[in-house]
Length: 134
Image (cartoon, rainbow, N blue to C red):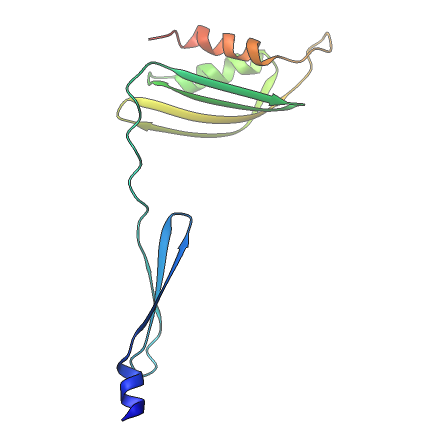
């Protein structure tokens, strides 16, 4: 009788990781545990205003984050302009949602012929020339 009660009892554990819930369900006479992954909550909608550009450069590592209205060829134009400044892109993560383009570009900042590296102000100015304020 005690064994039957243990078999019919289900233990449910919840573990939160990376905004997801993982539930492990055990029970019913040796059945394999099931893992159920709930999807993360929906992201907040992006604000409906112009453009945002954030640039950080630490030693020779750069991070460029931008959010702006989408247009065809935008990412390519940004990458080409940064290359002209000797900012060599190593990784790109981008998305397009409801006409809003969001990108994160990681890069290495190289010295030019004069031994000078591009500054944060120069990088921002170059991006603003490509994407005028809305």
